[in-house]
Length: 479
Ligand code: ADP
Image 1 (cartoon, helix red, strand yellow):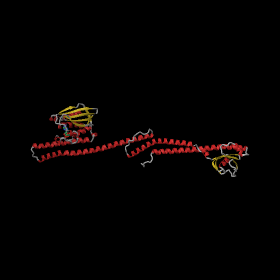
Image 2 (cartoon, protein in one colour):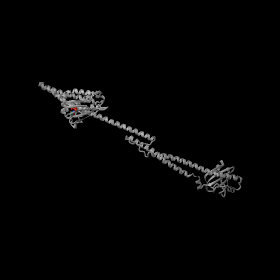
Image 3 (cartoon, protein in one colour):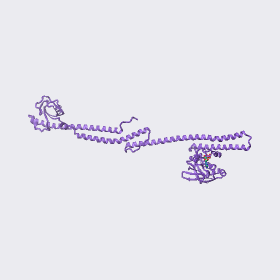
Image 4 (tube, protein in one colour):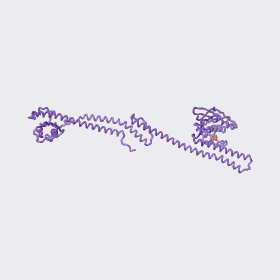
């Protein structure tokens, strides 16, 4: 962009308009002034020509005494100088001179014209004979030229000058044009200046908040459109940048979680693998162990193998879920059927723990979801209640349903979860009592899998402790 302009657009436009109007008015005044002057000169010349013509008529009938003839004629104005000249250029009479000069008058401008065309005048010429300046008007008929002359005094000058009131009138018109021009260009200039400021800001990529009203004309409408377009473009770009940042953040978060998961898995794998190794080494090194001790080590190795299998299952579930919702298959599922199946498969554990499962989910509670993940939600929560609650009842209940979702709760009447752990139990590998969790084959991934599966089905989950004791997991699933 060029350097800063010294004058605003309004000032330049105004002075341009002013210049044009002044030149126009000036030309008009000059032309009119000239025309008026010509008209006045012609009028004076006409009067003198008329007088000359009358005088020639009189001289033709009575040419003996010039003075007497001229005295008989009524002078058109006081102080008129009258001369009679022969066509050979000799002055034969002049009422202002006592002695006539012998000089030839044919070279005088008005005489010359009268010789050629019958009449002529000189606007302002100095007379050598009288040493004065005159307005001359000459008329020729046959071989006689009559010339009348008005002394060129200040009063004649004033008569011949154009009317000065016309000049004042035109000056007033010019002033009015200038004032009107100032206001007309000011509105236009303001719009242009605002557009200019907007363009400078847009070039620097600044935010433009100047969306105030423009005048109701074409330029105002164009300006409004341009600024609105730019604001919309800015908004789109801001949104795009935000989405881009979010995408990068999401990607970074995914990478961080994956890395954390890998570290945790390594850590979790170490214990069971080390334990299995110790068991197998003991069995290999002490082949003569008594059978009861021998089987104790085999059982221990088996339990750790089972834990390893659980861990691998959970990790594979989490990895599948992390790959995204787009990859999981969904189908219509009858939830009551799924929960009944779980009930059946945990019947043994329930009996051993002395727990009753209370089912409050009606038949035909149907959602579109992934069988494995939906099943793992209910399975994990029921398994946890059996494993950790130390209670006597587990209730699975449909709390609420809407056109778009179901709200379920799974509660027990056990020990509950200390308040400070309530939110964190959903984190990966988070356990309240590590030793106990390991003992019962827990991986610390169960509730994390539950939360991911709920989210993949458009829902949310949280846990609350209930009175007098126990914990309640409340979650929603989109239908
Ligand atoms: P884990 O594999 O250890 O079971 P989870 O993620 O399923 O891991 O559970 C996390 C922790 O939450 C458990 O270690 C346990 O201490 C606690 N917990 C989960 N459910 C209950 C419950 N119903 N009652 C009490 N504590 C529970």
